[in-house]
Length: 396
Image (cartoon, rainbow, N blue to C red; front, side):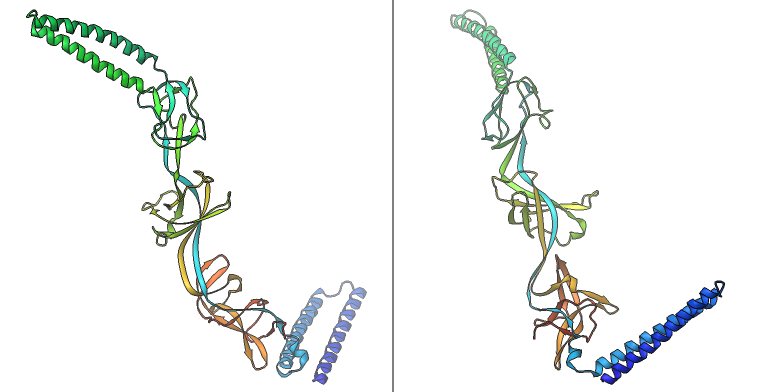
């Protein structure tokens, strides 16, 4: 065998020496005759390239024949170094990753019960906790108070007239119509006073629900009206009833529904919450081509409405699944395959395994068929490997 290798080396030396002589001769002629035929030189170059390729093919063929027949220790050292991982089964889960936000179930913009009015006093500031029924604002009520005073004066006079008519009627003096008119005057004034007092009470603005004063922009001296309450006024957020909302792309319509598990991560406070989808919208937004989902979450002092929430919706899970690192997947004319290590006689070789794949999440790819628990997957060093190539893990 050594004789064959040395003979091969001598052939190569003689061939390349001949090439060198030809090249030098060509260069010498070119220096003597600068107007030499360029076409002939190009033809010679092409012939040399072809000869070189033919020789390389012969060398490769001889090396292959030697590799198949040489079982010496030196040949074993040419095995390619790889890393192996034993195939097993585990639970595989696929999630849909989306960005959502925290929303409050109840957000109320405080509005006056009547026409509103000039703000005389503000009893709450932003961030305060508010109880239902708490006084928030005091509006100007001077006109209503003056109106009530005037009506009460008229009522006192009307009652006096009514009493006089009653006394005369008891003595048989006057008519019943006079008595009834006096009585009606009293009744009408009492109704007007009740209405004026109701209007007066509207100068006090109370909270209709408990929560936190998230927005307080109204100031003393400004006019508080219902028309401007959404942009200027007081907004109360009930933080005891919170939810996470997100928009899900339309292509997941058949995979996301009420009851799906969802993992919510709040990156700003490094907190993770597990919940379930309790609302899945039935309407597709024509602009974003998505539908709405929400999941209730428990109250927390660090949770804020409109806070960013990263959501992972569980849409597929499989027990006893076989998975592989996605970077080990390769393709050929027959389809998808991976390389596994198999023991053949006294050596370890790489073998192709055609596989059928399932879901992909992160760097894990589900394998539906083609691999079995206990198979040795080549996870490193598989680049450039061919079927049947000798491999080694470097461990004797």
